[in-house]
Length: 128
Ligand SMILES: [Zn+2]
Ligand SMILES: [Zn+2]
Image 1 (spheres, rainbow, N blue to C red):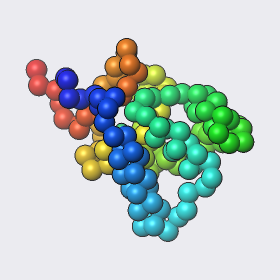
Image 2 (tube, rainbow, N blue to C red):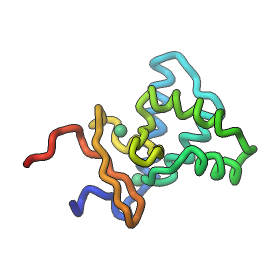
Image 3 (cartoon, rainbow, N blue to C red):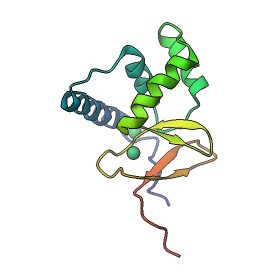
Image 4 (tube, helix red, strand yellow):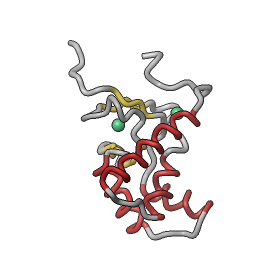
């Protein structure tokens, strides 16, 4: 499993850039524009590969911008989830930014309990 989780030395700016250009492409192809809250929530989730709760998102937004209500965060998450830019980890009730749009269909997640990092695996049954 050594290669599944990203090393702390990987250049995360590349992840962010890739995710953002994917988001921009989606917005262009659907003729929609992201709202300010949606962009903020996406920014927060793109900071690393960890899954965080909606309330954590509210707190982190409050540190960099005007505080918004949890219901606004949920609304923004809804949109991002539908676009596949963000995934929800049912078991933790937490959210993580999609880490690989090219391989992403119905991903499975590996969650590291010590570093809190989430790795996305292509949907394919594990071999027994
Ligand atoms: Zn990264
Ligand atoms: Zn994904």
